[in-house]
Length: 254
Image 1 (cartoon, rainbow, N blue to C red):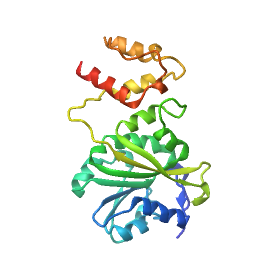
Image 2 (cartoon, rainbow, N blue to C red; image 1 turned 90 degrees about the vertical axis):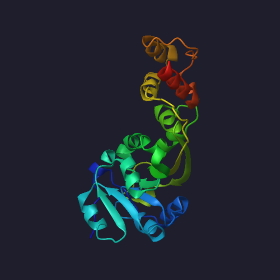
Image 3 (tube, rainbow, N blue to C red; image 1 turned 120 degrees about the vertical axis):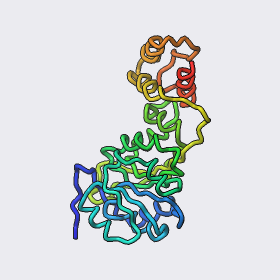
Image 4 (tube, rainbow, N blue to C red; image 1 turned 135 degrees about the vertical axis):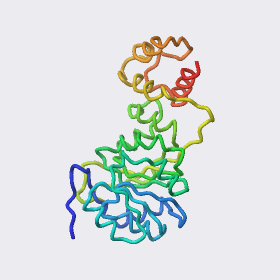
């Protein structure tokens, strides 16, 4: 039975066998992994992964695809919107750190990445197919146009690297963009680190990229009575991740 890709789910199905094999080798699944695939689709990655990891959990929203997936032994199928899944509870149920993989729907890839931040402490690693432009932004260093809110909010929590470029011709139907596989490994976090204000702080800093921080973040800090030594004579893209994190920590404790 054929399944037509649905635009509302952002479906582009991976079909290139060479690329599929390369991705599975990069993931390197082991028999006792708590492997979780987001958006398995027609199973291009699912079936090769299942050969190496006999117990695989998949998260799929499309009910027609869910029906197909449930016919296969060894699969634990969660029919849900990934943005509503509690990955902390899932890790507790599987009793092991999660290894997350998937070809993320490009129309909601950023919301998914932000949703997963809260569960980074129960994750061993993440291998995701993403739009190449998004992958570059995720791993961007300070000082360039690609370095922004996404870079800071992910790099404070993960080591990020692009491990494979994937052409549009590897999909059916082909997307209008090039893709890349990104590997994300959670970083150890200091005990007691409080960064509740980091998301708001970073959003304010990058709200007007062309302006110096004294016009944006400076006013935000002033409203909170903060008179520290943070250099506001810079633009947001010039500030390293560690300095944003340190400022958020000082605000939390001071």
